[in-house]
Length: 153
Image (cartoon, rainbow, N blue to C red; front, side, top):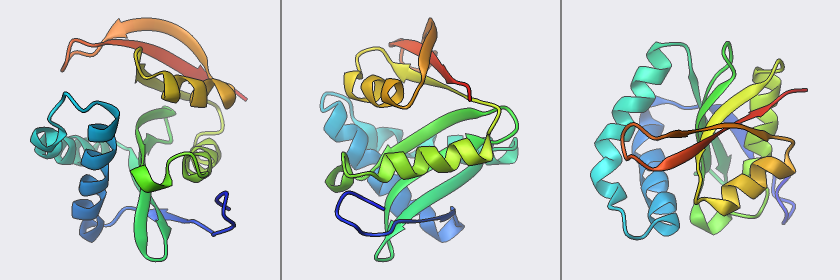
């Protein structure tokens, strides 16, 4: 349940979901980092999701009233969470909690992820959910400093 009592439904991402999911992804990241042109990264993201799915990851979407309000891409075998995003209008209202709970059910041995070091909101979210920082690195695509974080049951 979201903070307003609405029930979000999580299901596998379908081909016909991709355009709406990418629109949401671009808008959410654009709001978080206004100086970066995320519309220009749309094609890269589409290709990234396809490659991740080809190599064992699954894409999932969170729906409310038949609208995609969140999405994630997780490899249940390795526990690597590559993408988690929530529509800007739904941020802070429980959608990410629902997605992360689903990720934990799919990867019960643990979850690993990378997060931008300057994304304080995301870091607080992960720490609230029991993730710890396990290292630091640099994003090979952007050169931005990132943290490696992990959750173990």
